[in-house]
Length: 122
Image 1 (cartoon, rainbow, N blue to C red):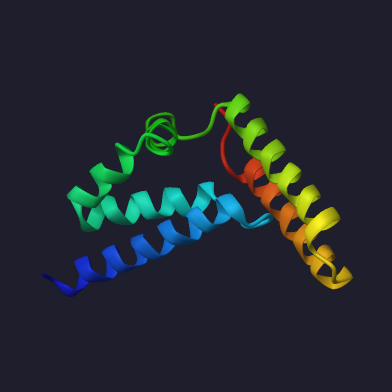
Image 2 (image 1 turned 30 degrees about the vertical axis):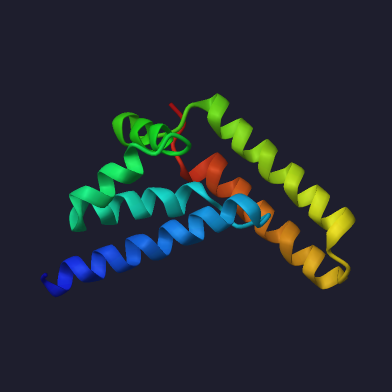
């Protein structure tokens, strides 16, 4: 296997893991990492790319983004709402340190800006 393919598969898997963590960690964006993983898999492993695209939970979102070059407004708003609900729960009930609370809120603001302004709306 060429070194380039190993590199693409390794980083695709790394970004997939980070994207999945973003589902559970408030402030850590999910969508950009999943899209990056899909792009790397597309160039590195057709098998892994197809498994990701055919995943019943996230595959259709990735395929739609690639097909339409953006996200539907409804999907964007749902992602932002879900992210802020998790941030609110974490900051209010889970996180004790004021500095970590500010960090999570700051990351949430960055995630909102990315979702709202960087990722195209279709």
